Length: 506
Image 1 (cartoon, rainbow, N blue to C red):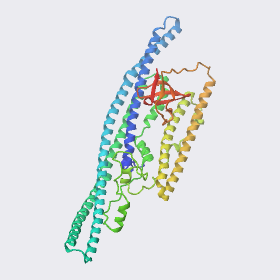
Image 2 (cartoon, one colour; image 1 turned 135 degrees about the vertical axis):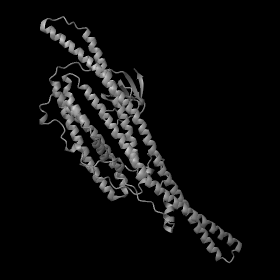
Image 3 (cartoon, helix red, strand yellow; image 1 turned 90 degrees about the vertical axis):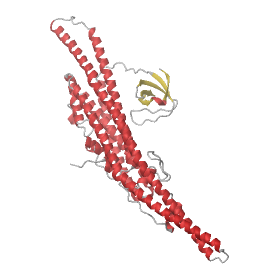
Image 4 (cartoon, rainbow, N blue to C red; image 1 turned 120 degrees about the vertical axis):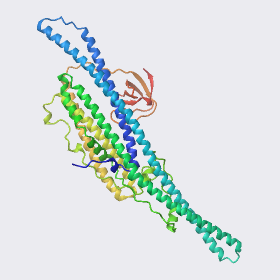
């Protein structure tokens, strides 16, 4: 059994915190989206039950005779029972799950804000100690250079027969004063070094590991609570007639397959950055070499952005705090474990010949969703490696290793693209084959609820969104309270952000 991966080991450094700030925000938004879906589903179920009840009231039970009459009455009764059961499902089960998800959002948002506040605090403490160290070192070197100049002037004056004793005494007094100030600045520099080392040790060995453990608990608890709500949903479905039971097996299997530890391991496999606590900072006595270096090299940390921002330095290393916490460029990330999808067969196989058309379609759609998620994640990793290749432009060894990883990552993306193309081809063939055996009906008409024009350019971030330019006119098909509207542009459909649009007519 492999050991469990930990955030506190694999996400050290400010980059690790920045990643968790982002992923925890996405995690809360995901719960919000699930709650909205449950709310919409509840409305659909309730409207269905009302529509069936209204329809049944128009039906006459005595229009037939004998066994046919009995069969007709049984059919109407069962339809009524089924409608009532779905209404009960919506009013009790879905409402309970929605309320649970809403409460989870509030709880996790409060916890996320607390963890981010603590992260900003410990990062600022480390940043302040580094700034103080830079200032103390700069002052020490400045005074040391000034004292050397005055000492040289005093030595020259002693050998000058024209120099008055009173003036020579003044120069000597100034040299003595500078020597006292240099001694004090040297003590201040040493104190700043000690404090910076203390803060560095405190950050990497105490404060951040503790905070990373809390972030890991945050995510694992979220997954467990979602698993509980998914289980409630599946259990509530189990009361439905046998026609619905066919879908329960795969649903229960997927829920029972949720593994918090495996999810955590997969997350860290994709994002672990290889950062380790840096070496202690050593006191550097002032010599000619350090004076020269000081005149050309700015002190560490003086020009960086404030804690919690994502600014970048001229080196491209990811901002001030990244360079502050990693004095030397990190080694290329360690090799990842073999992704699960590489050992999995996608698409329909000979073993699926016995499945119905709906079962085949459901299997392909599930694989399409899974592959799209894997592909999105691997493409993000690919972009990260491309940036890392540029970062190692001054380090040929590190760049060569990163290029090798980039090639492997490109292969992974290609494998996923091939899998996804195969699944989508089989899905299209399945739909085409089914369509050939059906009678052509009327083309589904999509109602346009509003017409809007783009206020700004928008570029889609995934396959479910729709890109558009400023000034282009879109047909709005659905206006969702979440702010994401479903729209049509030039025959393409997708979600768009409403705040990028100006509604022309409704």
